[in-house]
Structures are given as C-alpha cells and as structure tokens.
Image 1 (cartoon, rainbow, N blue to C red):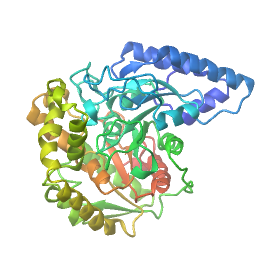
Image 2: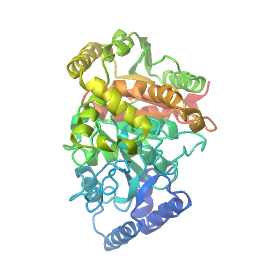
Image 3: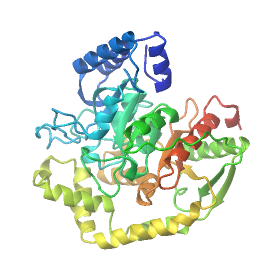
Length: 452
C-alpha cells in the first residue's frame, strides 16, 4: 500500500471497502519517512499509530466515519500543536514554550478524523519561495533531487509527493502553497483569506497570510478546504468546460516564461479550447505597473519586520537564514517606514484590477514562470534573490488583490512539473473548485484533449 498519487476519496473507498486499514496507511507513510524524512521537522509516529488503531476500531464497530477518518496528513511547522513548540522553521524558536492548544485548523482536521503524522519542513519564518532552509537537512524536489521543492510550504508538498501524507497543510502569503504544488507536480489551493482563521499559525503578514491544502487532486483540496473553513460554503454545481470564459492576462504574468513552462501553458490552452472553453487574451495594465506600485516596499516585509521586532527575534539575527534576514531586517524595515504608501498601492491594485475579470469565469496563467531551479544554481545570494523573485511573482499578485486561486499540474510524464493557476473572485472559492475539477480532467496527461 502506498499513498503516493492516491486521492483522499480513493483512500476512503479502500478503507470503507476493507481493502486497507488506517494502521496500514500510517505504516506506509512512516516507512517512506524512514527512508527519507527530510520533508519533516518532527514525526509523531506513536501518536499516529495509536490514532490509526482507534480509527480502525471505530470503523469495525460501524461508527459513522468523519470525512477524513484514518487518513494520514501532514502540517507545516508553523501551526500550533498542543504540547509542542512552534518553531516556524527556525532554530531560534526550537525551545519556545509549547502551545497550549491546537491551532483551530489542526483541531478541525483532527475532528474530521485526520491523523497528523508530523510537522513539515519549511522556509524559515515562511519568508522565501524556494523552500530551502540552511538550518536543516536539505529537502529536495521529489521529481528531481537536484532542484528546489518550492516554498515556503516545502515539506507539505514533498510529503504528499513521496506518499508520506495524503494532504499537506500549508500557508500561502505570496504563493507558499501554490509554488511548491507547481514545482512538485501537485494541486494547491489558496482560499480567500477571510474564509479560514489564521489563529494559531505563526504570522508572516496579517494582511496576506492564508491557509490551504496541497494534495493529489482538486477534489482533495475541496474536501479539506470545506473542513478548514470558518463557515461552510454552499457547494457550487459541477461545470463543463464548454462555454466557460477564461481570460489570459498578457501584462506581467507572461513575461520571462522559461521554455518548459511556456510550452506546457500553450498546450494547456489548446486543450481547454478543444474542450470548448472560450479563451481570450486581455490587457491588464495595472499588472504591468506592479513594480511601480510596490516600489516603496513589500507589505509582507513591512509586517514581518514589525512582528519580529516586537517579538524581540531580531536580537538573534546571527541565527537567521541570511536570505530571510535581509528580507526582514533591511527591506522589511525600509518598507515599514513606507507602510501608508504600500497600503494605498495595494488598494489601487485591487480597485484597478477588478474590471479585468468582469465578464469572465476566471483568469488563467502559469502559477510560476519557471520550473524549479537547481539548488546548486541558487547558492549565491544574488542568484537566490533572482530565482526567488520569479518564483513568487505571479502568485503574490493574487494575495495582493485578495482573490482565491487554485494551481493544477499541467506537465506531461517526463517533463519537469509546472502549474496552471485558476484565479477566482474574492469569496468565489466554490466556483474555482468546480472549474478546477473540469480543467483537471482536460489537461491530465491521460486526457485526449491535451494532444497537439
């Protein structure tokens, strides 16, 4: 039994059909972790086994099973887990006082029957998009061990790709769920921020942080999102691709695509058109003005600097990842001094981008303009900064305009992974899931529609 490539519904079916047990799924996850545990910062093996046995016993009794009963999942290292410190990928907080209670999202997963097998590797303080953290063993891309996994929710994605969890819970401030999903060939979802509480999650930016899943399918993400949401959304009826109107912005988000991503994106557009979707390339001039609008600094940096200063973390600056420290202490401090201009620039971006999607069902464009970079190629700070900026560019735009977005794989077998981003309206999450399931069916490597 392996979890790799399996959807939650497939695992649920096997459990209910008696073809496997929760204990067998947990053991499969732990065996994979024993072979390579770099996706994890901490593994709760004995607790996972005990919870699996309890789940199997309840199933044998005929108890009504909650939606994630007996399913192994992982959680990013910045969520509070009762009785454990919350290091957030940092050695500074390794010995912090233990959390008194689970973060609400962790509690909701447990109530739904999920078994949290461990806390996952992440970029320090969630503040880079490549997923590298010099304080811990390197967590490599499971599709190509020479490449970065994407971040900051690196271990969340890698744990799913390796079959160590059926879902990895992450956070997304500028793409930290969608980037590793795209780099690792998985599906990732960033919800409308206001739908899911961030209580009990170590903050990066109170204005931009959101919580979402990485998994093997759109339906997996939809199921988990419904469990995490503060208030359940009304499900959107299924949709067919025929007749859907997708807009492809030509400003900014299509700049500097590498050859692999560009080819996969063009093939995906053909597949969607052949399936009956209407695709229109449009101008969104405000997107092209992104560098101008953010010239005074990044909102995430300003808010991170304020938090780290007040928490007296910066007095331990010698223990930070240098690539993180420069973004918080230098650029963040500069941005904090211009916070009023930055907030006004964001309001301008939200206001002026709103008409772009009017009359369309969604915006679509590559999740990340590049494939995962080779780790050896980003060892120097300047190279890291350039690759990190490109990795975050398209995804961070969506956080700034306060939309929901889904990243679905668009690579074929043998290609480096890349993602297609489906961007919905604020609070349009249910419709994005419905569209995502339709798109997923058309761009799958096994679909007849994705042939030239």
